[in-house]
Length: 330
Image (tube, rainbow, N blue to C red; front, side, top):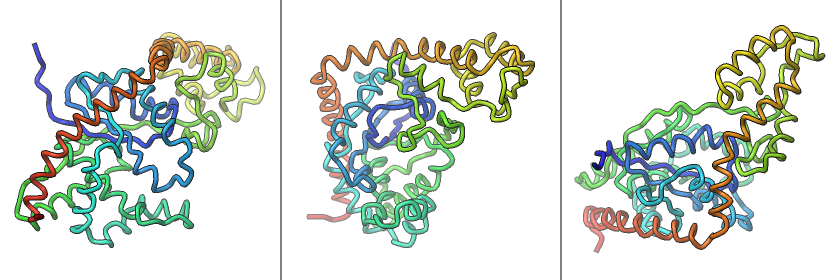
């Protein structure tokens, strides 16, 4: 018996290559879970990456590495559409049309644009300014009505909703669907430095596809309670990044034991890290096994992306036929 789906979800992710724990806890787990209740459209947004990436040498490989991680994590290609953004040319056409109903001031007022300008003032290109318009095209092209977002992404989704209303009003149509927000609590996963958000660029990450040995090495570098200088000092689990990970990946009884023993110096940071590394490796073992099998046949992975793009193009063209007619294009 087929379960009735609640709607169609769209989400896009930049091709950053092999994914890390922050990606897994912040997005990939949610992507996998959403498949149970929604039709899912997941896009590897390579065009978006061009707005900030000047060296595209690894773009293709990064795309395949991300696809491998998604599939190994549990994305079910038979029911979920997973594809590469640039493989559906209709998205750039819709982006151009939507840009005609978008005031420039709305784009430059977005907090994320201002942040990008501060971070990289020498590379403020047109694509960066128009990023939210392309994002809107991504969402509405595939008739998606649900978008899972964290609180920091809410302004972009509200922008998309306003753009849809502007388009439909100007052309007296209801062709484009106004997407609804599905609030997703995205945890801030700290890197092994215990200070900054986990990030490849900061080299404070733990890759999902790393070997067990590589994972243990990274875990042993993790910063714990800065006030616990000696093994005999009592610790404070509530401020320890390793303990925060234990709460996610370790059994409840072990978490309770570490909480108690750390506070009375019954367990040291080295032992605590070793326990976490063992539990993390055990959790990721099935993922790594599936990934290794998938990586043996990259032609099959490419076939998944090609099939996803073909299915996405079919939906996209249906949308664009109606958009062109509404706009009055000959």
